[in-house]
Image (tube, rainbow, N blue to C red; front, side):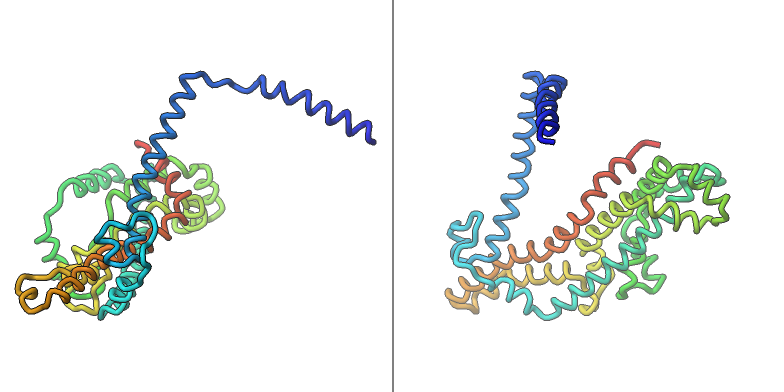
Length: 318
């Protein structure tokens, strides 16, 4: 048995150089191009990571260290004063809950509408498919503007309600086009016909055949809508008046405005109070960036593997 093992080992060792010889050799030009690509990617990664790390480090540092530029990539004189000030702001946690509700409900509704509209438009047997597609492109290019949009929302009695943050912007024409292209280029027609022969209706085909094969585009749509709704504050500024309905972005904007002193305020404060207030305002800016960005930074890696695939397939030209 030991003889057999030695013979096998010898055969493997003799086959290894042959495999190495069969390997395609890269030319100097190819290696140089790869080296340039790696260097450029490394510089891009540094350009993204270094500011992000600095913001996080500054948010946990003392105000004096930040003002004197002592902070680089690690907190100096660690402190949680900025986060304590933001978290203790009245209405902050309620606004955070509102944003979670708006993001979850808006993303679910928007993805559902994109799928329910994109799937029929991808079917060649749909009568008037080109007319509907042309209308979508027209609406994508031209719109009535903010004032007619506000008047429509007001006529539907959605101003100063949670629905104004979910329904008016639920349908995205770009997302419909993305979903339509994905369905048309990815879902085999043979599976659809087989499901129809087995007795599935149109909704059965969509639920049992199409959606299980559409995880990449669903992840792309969910990420696009979730990031957009989470960062949205303009429509909240237009449609909402009650502070109990404010999203977190609007509350963070209020905190940032309150951290700026007006000339009339300075006259009533001592130099020490002014300095203390300015120090706190400096830290608040970095803490707000971290608080507003952290949920999406956690959410994105979970969908990243589907995001690249969905954007690549869904962006193919029809």
